[in-house]
Each structure stands twice: as C-alpha cells, then as structure tokens.
Length: 101
Image (cartoon, rainbow, N blue to C red):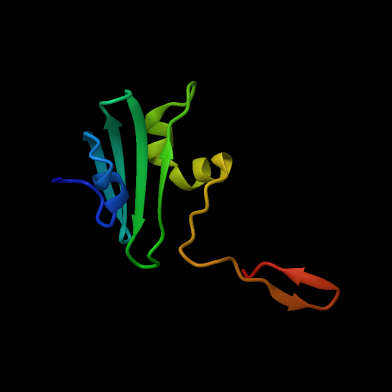
C-alpha cells in the first residue's frame, strides 16, 4: 500500500482499506492521518525511525482529527497508549524509584 507506514504488517494483514489524508515528517518522525473506509474511523499513526517507536491512535468521537495529527504524543498519553518500543526503565534512587529523565 503506497503511503502506508512501514512496519504496519498487522494493518495490511487485516486487509483494511486505509486512505492517507495527510502526512508529515520532522526529525525522523513520520505521522500519518488515515481514514479506514470499512468503518469510517480516523487513525493517526506514528513511526519514529530514531527510536523504533510505533503506535496508532483511533480518533474518538468529539476529538478533532487534526488536533490528534498535530499532537499525537499528547493524545497517546490521554488514550493510555504506550509509545515506547522499549519497556520503561526505572532508576534506583535513595528513598525509592524514579523514571529516567
């Protein structure tokens, strides 16, 4: 499928018809705004070639697709979607654990 995010074999395996509505690239991070014809869903897919991170967000009712497209990491956090290709590490510090900065 031309214009589809690289490495999205699951999407292709499901044989869904996705239409690319928009695409942008910055700092080796590709973001796609996609429309799934079968159920009229709008998706935003992100592929970070520096880190290997990849995730897809389904735009929910009441959300503006262009807002999700322009701020995918914020919406991923809001939706509870893991964006990191690696498991979160924690650093041992005096008195407990802390996330790395």
